[in-house]
Image (cartoon, rainbow, N blue to C red):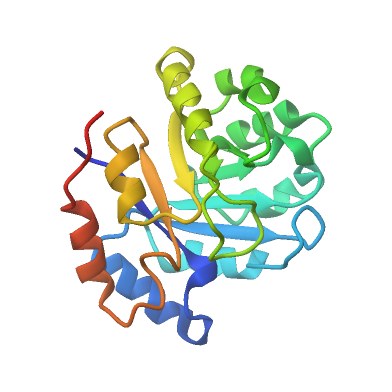
Length: 223
């Protein structure tokens, strides 16, 4: 079974970001996940527009840009002009007055449109947008900080989304507290990709290639 493994770059060593990108590329990472935080929509600041633009220039791998910012419509052009066609841009519907308008701008720029759903956001509140987007990023923890605990009730939401994805034409991705156990359980159910941070990938004093190889070879649970 094939599933995508995406590196959460807010967890990388910024003392040598170029080295991190090269080593992750060589290890076989599928994409680079870029968390942009404004200190308002979430209580933290993370990666910058400059960090995102550098990684976009440094690799040919796809970027997944996760905008955890208020009213992304007001500044979406700054991000789109520094990305490549085919990169993904996620917005949080709660952060925007008219999220469908922002998603259309992402589509018109040739990017992949996505929404990110917080643990406390119900499927019903984003139901209509599921027909617009290509990707849905399910947050299994509250956004804003790495290393948080998994919210078990998110599993029921994932089951609901999995039942809708084929009909509505989107793929489902997991973000937050993702380890071997979550991949083993949820990849067979239909989760397309997993964002990897400090739980399993970064700060382990092991080669990235060894970690990614183990993840791709884990025994998957039953559907």
